[in-house]
Length: 392
Image (cartoon, rainbow, N blue to C red):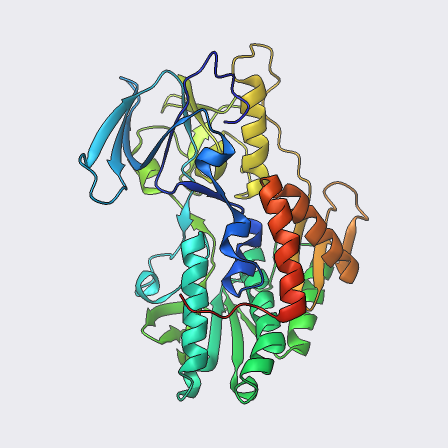
């Protein structure tokens, strides 16, 4: 968006939120290690010469090149409106996958946006200040991928460093449990790194229960198959992603596994006959390339965006090719995992050095100079004075 030549293009952006989110550090904001503004960047601040509409796209008429929008501004004069386009880029992302399990949407917290992190922080403080019921101090995470593990690590750091200082009587009563349907945690990582993370969590007293199936979620309790009722104070749901409702409406080709929009190697959206729509592109979690099951990661979305900026009108473009740069995950107590075996077979590390690589990588990838100043500043504040536990 920022790189488009404004002398050639009038750029319109439609999004229900007026900021971008740097999701790799979102877990840190949920427990006060960082503040919310450290991981956000205003749309207009990122690229000023645009026309921005705070709205959600409800439908797309691909034949007539019109998008139908629902205004997200409170008390707006027009609740719906339409926009014409010459070139359209679809990047609506995806939703947290609940697998249709009853009660998840109503009783669990997710971790996809700043509002989710704010809700988690607020609920944490409620559990600590209303701890007469011991069940309120049982914190449950469902999903042991990178997001679930990183949140659990941040939460344990919060309990061991800050709850122990501010609520010392509560620390022996706190309990953390992770559930996953898979046989091991961090299944996308090297098995040795995954086992190392498991061992570190065991040493910290964090229970990991794999091959467990959640049957339903109720207020302050969930039902686990073959285990029964499990009470909790906070439940964070991190079990992967599912199709965006807009994508479900579109009459275009979709992959059979995740129902994502199918594109060709130039990122052009395909119709049911696998013919690309002219000037319609799709990037990010909502799309994948035909015959290529790309992972649902920010790394893929970023590379697609760069490719599209450089090659959109190129007739000699070789087509998009994803370059896997590896994976990282924070596992608590200033330790992390770095798995770059996709780049070099021996490029795997765990422990404190990996944590320094994790921090330096995400610091360098933050979206603006403002964020590059804010992030180390709040890291220093947290190290010096502890995390902010204000409830607001």
